[in-house]
Length: 254
Image (cartoon, rainbow, N blue to C red; front, top):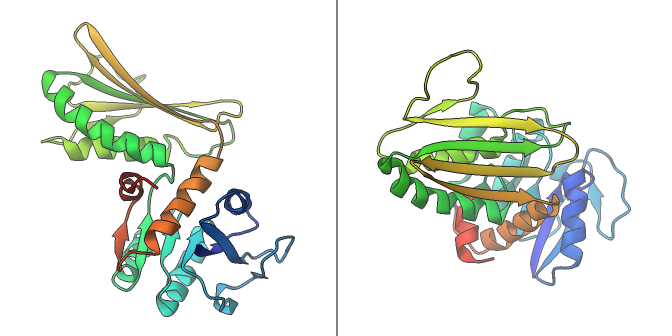
């Protein structure tokens, strides 16, 4: 049984992780931390993580970037593995994450879905085979109409994974409306669609001469990110200090 402290327990993802945990015999939330002291859970909730002294095997953080420094410091002090799901970290905070990983195990990923991270591994193989053969690469991502950033962090993550597999980097093209010219061969086009309540869809297109390969991941619920975070907590609880990512969890089969 992996004992988890949920930082950001009263947020949308914190509540979803709790619901998923209830159905998982291998994980249990033993404490929560949230600025709002609302507590309708069967575990204690603290407004400050430094007040939480309950024994645990890992911390899952789904909060805000402004809280990350305190979470890192507390986890380092108590030698607690940390699944860091919060986005929007500054360069200085990223350096803090790297320093913390010298003392504790830290997992940080652009997307907590096991499916997306398995997809990233597949895309590396596809790019290595298809890019040298002249296939063009395009990414189309779709999300709900309340999403603020475009393109999504996951689309950029997939593009970065493809680029890392190639001998020479491709440029990213976000908008073709301002130029009237043929497509450059060494580029990855990234397009964003916003509408309705789409949880998330990422489609990667490899377009060659007279053939097209399309690989798509569709998220039907945010629960996939909760399941991924719990799998990551189980994974980290057994690991030595270091910086880990979700592709390692996906490869572990959890």
